[in-house]
Image (cartoon, rainbow, N blue to C red; front, side, top):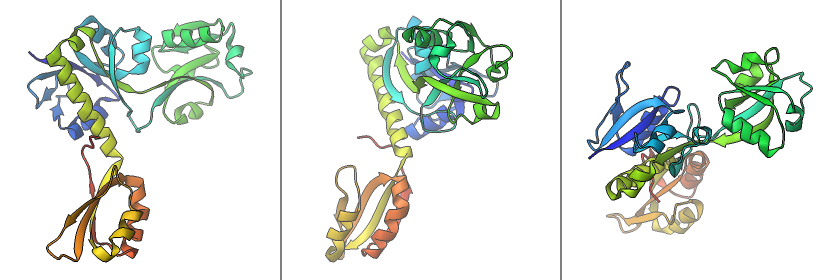
Length: 289
């Protein structure tokens, strides 16, 4: 028995492989192959477009997969959404599908899209957005290079963006956010009902989430005299409480904690001033609450 797992091919592929590696799963694939090798013999990974993964998971051809909320909604796939995994091709933030128009377009709001033509890869998502606002517009599927279609071919587009820089470079203005999306681990309902597969999927979810949490955190350890211990503990944040361990010298202890990476730069000088010595900062692979 194996778990057939769909992994996104394309822009998310390397970030997904990196995340799997931090979670403890070494995964590699040849340049022309769609079947990666993984160092867990119970998982059978398959590479395919993220847009298709929800459909094949829903049909039971895949037991589980990594795909975006956008494609779950777009394909109207009936799947179990196991957990959120907020990462994208270039950042750790959710991506957005946005309505964009030409900089000089007279369109100022969603209501101004009434009777207009819109191009997008997410036709179903866009139609739902318009229906919620009681706007009727023509929505056509775009095969790509969507930005170039405004304004000569269409009045507006719905396009995926992380920073908005590509839209701005093409002289486009964001009108509204249609959908905020992030990667999700999904499972077929049949596989979720199978006790072995469900446990395997839940373990994968726990380790992937732990790897994402750890990506933004570091560990700190230091030696502290007992006379300065209270001052040090008052300075440092921790998931619960810092770990304090005895040293061979009874007058000193070792203190260890986990904190957000962005806090370490400012905290380390303060710890040094308060009497900490031998301060070591180290990266983390996984943080499991």
